[in-house]
Image 1 (cartoon, helix red, strand yellow):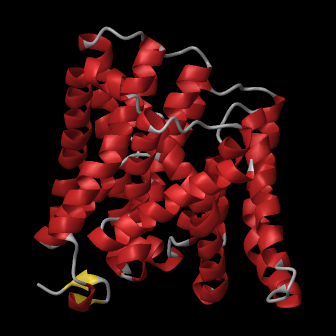
Image 2: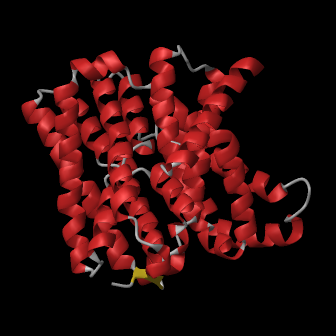
Length: 378
């Protein structure tokens, strides 16, 4: 086990070195390294890799929610909500319509396709924001807030269409609502008494609540990342004042857990499967990017983003990974989609995490030195 663990961390180290040499986001390099390792090096997952990868996705999703500045969400409510909703509605409708009416997928399989391709990757966007330093700017906070609205819509749609409406769903909703309401004040009091001690009790406390609500979500046939995102947002105001705690948790996530998630995401791509379905993959990728553009780009113009900021926002909102792969896995594990359909969706999701992000980072990243109050000076 330890030797296998060292191989995974070795691949993560290699990915980190490549990212440092090339200037490309480490999360994207880890995905590409995972693709190569899965197809040519025989790398496979097991129970503990799945667990660590799952913790990585929950950890990262919680931190992404915690990075959403509540002040910006309120002051830029129209921008964040409008961009987030349109970034969900247009791709969902486009992917659903194509797979159902043109590709001939079943109704439920097309619904899974619409959900999987309507997502924006919180994991990728958050990682890019942190690496570029834009998470501290108003633009970065607007993008993260829009991601929250976008992915909240996708997860809610997954729940509405496929969740079990039973006692577990009721328990999940009630417990999550209570914790969300009480968490901000309780967290401040807990940190004041037990924070900054060797035992790191504040981190244990936070993730006890995240894993508790995540477990209830799973019992209700929902996904653990949904309450993680909501709870992260609930304590985002607290983290605005406790940056050191946020940095410590971020270091733990990026060093230990998220490499397993991103490397594992690359393992889902079967190169022979990609080749045999290449035309459908390309069409769905173009549909996802085009519908994101139609929904987001005009909105950024209405809200007077600069051209550079508008394209950067549009491209990052076109990414997909965490909720996209989760939706596809949900469909496969519940026999809603076939293995071939799963390969197609996951490949499109991963390509959407790579291509728009590379273009955004290479050609449209706003210079932080030119940002005044988070808005580019043009």
